[in-house]
Image (cartoon, rainbow, N blue to C red; front, side, top):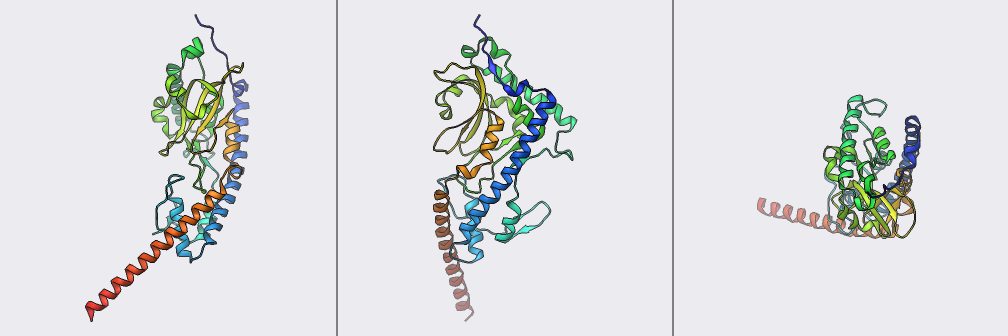
Length: 314
């Protein structure tokens, strides 16, 4: 029988109350940093748009076109139309109103059924059931060649399980429209068993260069081909215990690897450190050209129709 592998998980050493307190503090810091970062990032993007030649109607079209960009290399005209409507029915139809409301985003996707943001008893039971299913699936797909008997007994990372007790997920607003990072959203728990990765899928990931991966699952993905993987890993050629790590596979110039949820959240809420502002500036310039041309074309088309109408009336 193969010797069981040892998997290091520091967060699992804390007591239940210590885990809850540690995660609550981590999320509070994340919320504060993310809110400040979103304010700076959105403000800088809107400043670029408003510095462009043209009136506010053009700038709103530019904002709508910028925010409709669904890939770093794809851009298509998308007019403002009727603006944005908030849950209370309030419509946002000015740059200043958009700035005032959306700059307050903090990246947290809270639980919706309790006043304190924590899970209700019913939802807590559902979460435990889903995590148990995920753990079973991860064990089933784990690489027995690397983990031996440990593949049948490995536990999910304690910090991820604790995270979902406090919030249903986290996300990055992507005001810069450069880094399309998936949300970590517990709404995928309904199909959570499908997220576990088999050994050959783990070995094919581009984001895990220099690491061996023995088990894991997709913790966040989107339609742009980006994903976040939480996996049992070990550096190639380095003597160290196996441990849970987070790998971000997205449209980045380099691989991003994080030792735990806390480290990942610090990075995610510090976008000023990794936004390519020259790329944002270039993109906003392209947005201005597209929107200005389309608005001119629409104005000329309207004028032509009016002239034809006047001609028929005459």
